Amino acid sequence: MTDSDAPGPVATARPRGHRAYTMLLLAFLIDGVLQIALAGYGTFDLDGRKLDAAGNEAFAAHDMNATLMTVLAVAILVLAVVAREGGRAIGLAALLLVLTVVVQTVLAILGKDTPFFGALHALDGMVVLGVAGFLHVSAVRAQR
Image 1 (cartoon, rainbow, N blue to C red):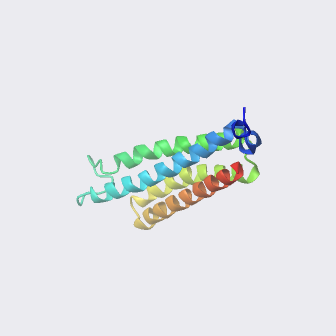
Image 2: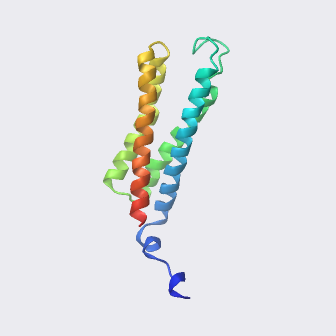
Image 3: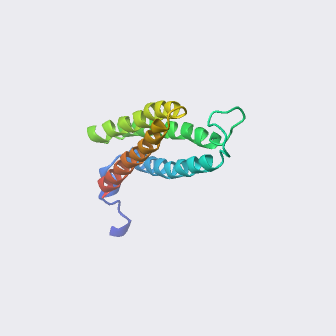
């Protein structure tokens, strides 16, 4: 075995869970971009119908993908704890979960009747991606 084949400090400095945590954050970010595209699709597919009108499936894909984002947010928090990412990362992963599940759900429900809350739903989505992006960049830097 040559020196170049030996495990570097990255391989030994962090537990295996750290790599899974980092990759899950990346998946969350990619899915978040998809979620924005699905929201845009739903908006332009309304054809003048009410958002919650019977038979309106314009936001069905966006709603289904929200479930996936919830699962990813839960898994990120679990991996942050298991991989011992530290208090700040665990706290921000918990915040990510709350913003993704609780705040987004409440704002989406309120936004059906009040566009102001719909706008806050979109802005909270940007905050969610910002928190996930910060966590991902921090995790990548910790590998170095």
